[in-house]
Length: 267
Length: 129
View 1 (tube, rainbow over the protein chains, first blue to last red):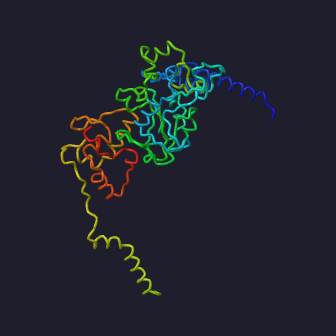
View 2: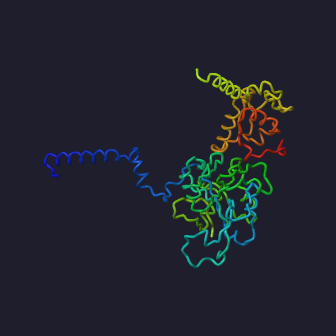
View 3: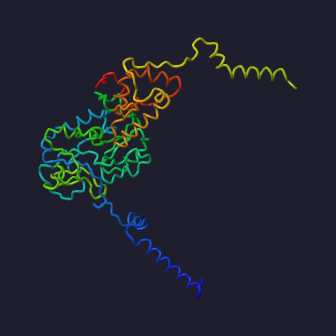
């Protein structure tokens, strides 16, 4: 195809107009187009700018220096299992895990230091749902059965869960478990104040939303004999969690993935 | 009409068979009766008016579910101005303590099968707590 002088001039004119129009649309940073562009192309999900601007951003700080001293202690896990009617199917394949333990090296898999503190080497540390500030499970849930509350808790609406398990695939921490069978017969001591789940539903730790709504602390925080778990509002500069983070070195699980996990481990 | 007798006989048999449930129901002594749910003896008012609860209790429960799980609310204010905790086990069953004599009577009659109790606990032990 040959380009005539006339067509070339037409194309140049259209290009100039388009450029000018695009510039006009994006000239103001708060214009809708500019916002879409910055959301899609510019915003880095790892950037701290995207953190919840809510008044309350709940978070947990776990002092591992206190926690790892007693490797046999499962008080937080026991309290949680009892409070939330967590079944014991008797095999690890079907296990329902709200709080569980991982080896330090496995929990913090992207810590690159080969030589770590002797007190943590091979030790079991408690891991939870991180109630991420940028939760991938919420992103993929097709029914909005899992969603982020205004205070940051990543909540489960078990009524809505259709059991597709996308969230389990999306969660990089393995914090979600699936009920392959009706869990009721496998709950040894039922807490009648809390519902059970049914077959075909995904469940996870929700930081005791039922207690938080009443102004109580999560049951694991209360159960810890070492007071190694601290729970509070990260957006309140005077809170205990903020004080601990200010005074201590903390790490999070797989922060590089951009999920912004909200459990901070003091090491 | 060819084979008129056969056709009419066949039609009669068909109509009789097709309507047999109605004849059975009329003739049988165990005909379905209007359900009689057992109401709590010691309570005067529910969380809303009786007529509203009769027709819309499922909508109310659905709203409670939404507000508790998704909006983090706890209390419901009844038309008479009382506050109730939005909880199936603790609030509803506190008065309607026997679900098989209350819920199930109408649900069985209407042929509906809600799955509330798959997860929520039906318990007698929580009354008054």
